[in-house]
Image 1 (cartoon, rainbow, N blue to C red):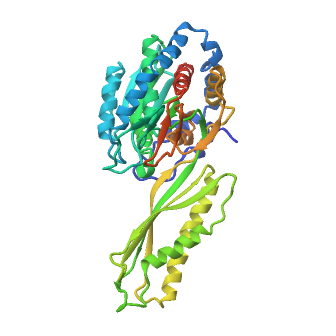
Image 2: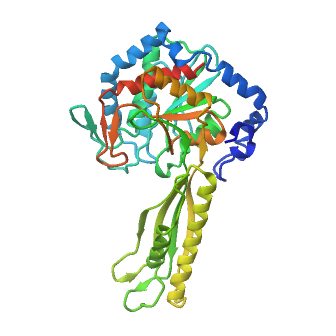
Image 3: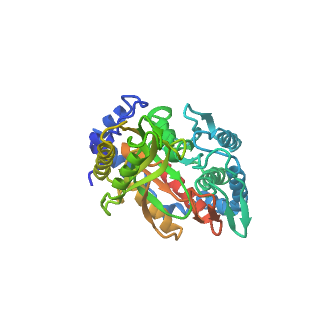
Length: 439
C-alpha cells in the first residue's frame, strides 16, 4: 500500500458542505515533503522502545498507579455511565468531563463548537502533540434507563463498555501520569468527543481536525470499547435515508394505486440479494424502516435507513452504486405494476459519511502499540473497525484505536456488560502507549 502522506489525492473526504473547502490544504502541503517528515517521525519520535521505557522509574510508577487506582476508576466508570449521553445530546456528560479535566489539572480546558471537551497536558515542547480521546455519546435514545447493575466483577448497563470504558481509561491515564510526575517530551491533548455513534457521523472528530485543532495534531489515539485489540484499519461507511412518496388513499376505494411501502419492500428485496466481496469485507444493512398511517390506508410516505461499509473505498463505492440503482429499479417496477396510477417516487438522502483509511501495520505508531503490548505481555491483536480514528487515518495522520481492557458483551444493546476482571491491564497499556507516543 502506498504511504498516504505522499499522495495528496488520498487526503480528500467525500464532499461535505458543512466542512471548510480548504480543510486539507495544510496536510497536502505537508505531504509534499515526505523526505523531511517521515525520517524525523521514524528516527526521533520513538527513540526509546516501550521495553526500554519500563526502565524509567517514573514510567514504572505511572503503571503502578494505574493498577492501584483501578477500583476507584471502576466506580467512576459507573458514575459516568449513569449520566445520559444520547445521540446529539452529550452535554451533561460533557460538563462532567470538563469538571474532571479541570480537577486533574489539565490546561486550557474548554468545550469547542461541536461539543468536544478539550484539555491539554503540556510537555517539554509543544510537539509532537498526541491527541488522546474517547467518545461521550452512546447509541441509546433519550429516556433510556442508564442505571448500572453489578454481579460480581460484571457491570451491566447501556454504554458501560462503549464508551464509558474509554472515558474512564482516559481519565486514569491523566491521573497516573500526574501521580508519577511524568513529564513527557511532547504534549498530550485529551479530548472527550461527541458524535462518534450512528448518525453522529464522527462530527466531533471532523470538527477537531478541520477546526478546533486543525494543523496541530501529530498523532492520535482513541480508546473505544473493551478487550485489548488495536484497530489500525478504518472501515468507511455511507448511510442513507430513503423516502418513498405517493398520493396515498383508501385501501379499498383507491385500490390499484402504487404503494410507497410496497416500493420500499421491492428495494429491500433487491438490497438483500446483493453479492459483496468477503475480502475486503464489505457489508450492507437496512437498519430502520417506517411509514404509513393506518392498516386500511395506502400510505403516502415510507422511509428506510441503510448502512453500507467497507475498509476499501472502491468496494464501498461499488455497493453504493448498486444501492442507488436498486432504489430506482424498485420505484420503476412498482409504478409499472400499477400502470403508473398514483405513481410513487423516492429520494435518497446521504445522512452519514465515514471516511475509510488505514495506518499501515509497519508504521511507527502501530509498531509502537504492538511493542507496548509485548512489553506488558499482552497478546498483539490487530483489527479493523469504524471508530474516531477513521478521520485522521483518512488524512494520513498516524492514528490507532485501542480497546480499554477487561471484556464485554452486548455492545449497543440494553444488556451491554463489562467484566472488570484484570481491566487494569488495559489501563496500563494506555498509560505506557501515551508516554511512548508523546516523544
